[in-house]
Image (cartoon, rainbow, N blue to C red; front, side):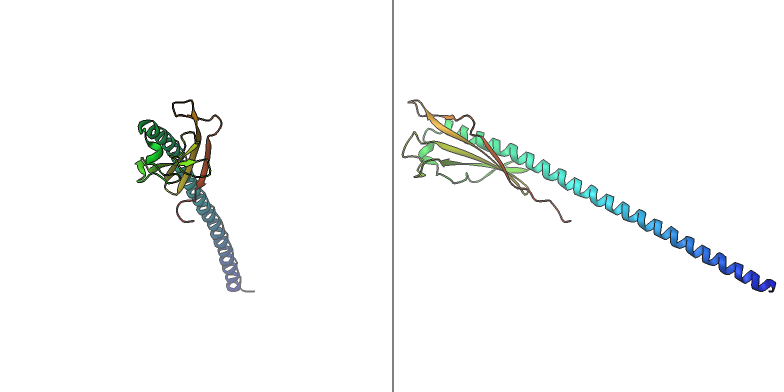
Amino acid sequence: MTCTQESQRTVRRSASRQGSIYLAVMGVAMIVSIIGMASMQIARLQLKSAGNRQDLEEARLLSQSGVEFGLGNMDFLPNWRTGMVSDVEMTPPLVVGNGTMTYSLSLVDEDSDLSDDTNDSVRILGIGRVGDAVYATSVLLEAAGALEVMQIVPGTWRRDAYYVPMRGSW
């Protein structure tokens, strides 16, 4: 074997080793970049989830405010039974913070007529909306005494989250 043939083999071996090292480095770089992209996607989803939780909490507070607003209107308006319609949301909704607040009165009896009997129980439904989050809070009121005063029935507060989709695209 000549010196030239031996040097050519050495060059071929070192070239093939360099190619193997290059492929190994590229493989590791690809794995690191995939891990980095997955981490960023997880962080994006956590941010969306935090925003949805914040919207739902704000909608919950607005729904409670809607109930309080309805109670205040019942105290302020002496003819609330004739001036309001059962199962109809107050319009227009009040804009508060990042969302809206509204309420409706709903009779518990069969005829759904607010003005026919001052002893009919009434359920106030407060609805809070922020973004796509909708939250409802309700309480039952019943007549107390001869003065047609409505009082909250203990244990009748209900709270429901209706719709909370993930914001943005996946």
